[in-house]
Amino acid sequence: MSVRPPVVVFDVNETLSDMEPLGRRFAEVGAPPALLRVWFAGLLRDGFALAAVGAAEPFAVLAAEGLRTVLAEVPLDRGMDEAVDHVLAGFAGLGVHPDVPGGIRALRSAGCRLVTLSNGGTQVADRLLTDAGLRGEFERLLSVEDAGIWKPAPAAYTYAAHVCGVDPADMMLVAVHPWDIDGARRAGLQAAWVNRSGTPYPGYFTQPSVTVSDLGDLARKIGA
Image: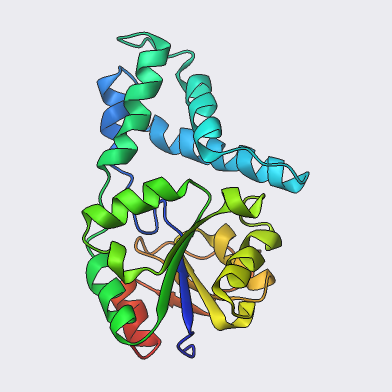
C-alpha cells in the first residue's frame, strides 16, 4: 500500500480515455480496425525515439504522419487526406473509461490535487474531461509540449513537479502504460499502474508503487 500523495498526475490517452472506438474510424475509411493498435504503438515509438536524442514533435504531427504510413498500402474508400482527417477527428468523440468518474471524485474528495500530464495536447484532455463532467476536479492540465520533451524522459515528469510546486516524491503518476510507470519511478515519483486487462507487468521495468484494477481500486488502496 502506498501513502496518499499530495498530487496525483494522470496520463490521458488510454489511461483516462477509452480509445477503442477509434477502431471504428479505421473501418469507416476501409482499413482493418486492428490497425489502431499498430498505428498508436508506432506513434509512441517515434515520440520516444525523438526524446532519446533530445528532440520533440507535437503529438498531432506524429499522429498524422504515422497514420499516413500505416494506411499507405490499404485500399481506402476515400483520399488519404480525408481518411487521415476522419480517423483523427475521432479523438473529439472519445469518452472516459467507466471507472474514471467515481475514482476521480473519490481522490479529489480525499484532498488530492489532481493534474494531467499527457504526451498529447492539453485541448484533448480538456475536451475529454469537460464532456465527462470532470474538468472542475483537475487544477491543471499539463502537456509535454510545454516540457519540451516526451515522457518517459525524466524532464517531462520533473516539469510537472515544478509547475505544481512539489518535489517529485510528492507526486504519484497514474497510467496504464508500464513504460510511463518506469519513467515516473526513475524520475523519483510514486506510480500507480492501472491494469484493467490483467496482463503481467514487464520485469525489465521499474515496479510500480501500487497496482490497481481501476481508479476506484486506486482510491481505496491509497486510503481515499
